[in-house]
Image 1 (cartoon, rainbow, N blue to C red):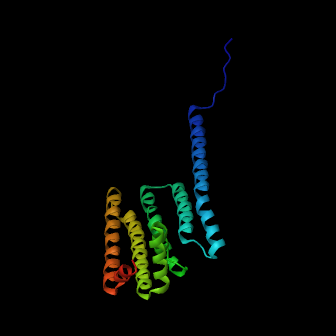
Image 2: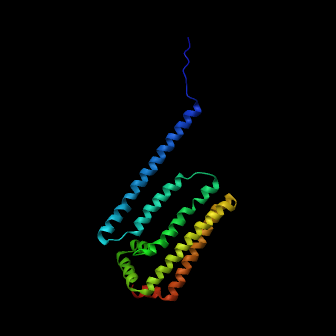
Image 3: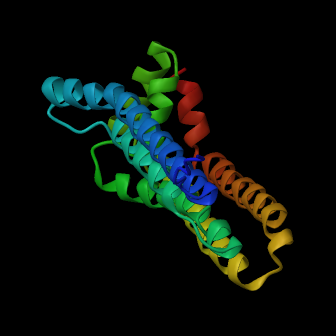
Length: 203
């Protein structure tokens, strides 16, 4: 006598397996996010303990990690996937502008952290003591912040109005043009106002 056993449909088994694998990948992404956030969180705590102020660079790193995690959860039609690329540049531009209300703007904070100890201290001293340098940093922050926000807005517009295949290349070209324009404005302003001369004098 032949005994027939019930088997789950192959398609259902594959679907369940795919859901399980996706869940594992997502759990791994969130674990990586939590681990990567530890260093910035420690930096924020130490800065607050020593100076009683927030660290704009560490805050941005945590926000960028969270935003990257959220972007990976977004699915949909190709235009939606293209539009989500604007989140990064939009968040960066918004953070640059928002940091102007902090003790030290984001761009200056990054420059100080990436510079040798002597140069970083000089930048901090000039930010507090030189009106020309102070104004130049503000202008640079405005230029870069507006450039990244413009890139984000343009990417959304292109994603929903232009042929899908042309958007990635045009987005790259647009970002390069905006970066060149922002940096050009910063360089011109630095020369005309004497900010570069101040930097050389205190070099």
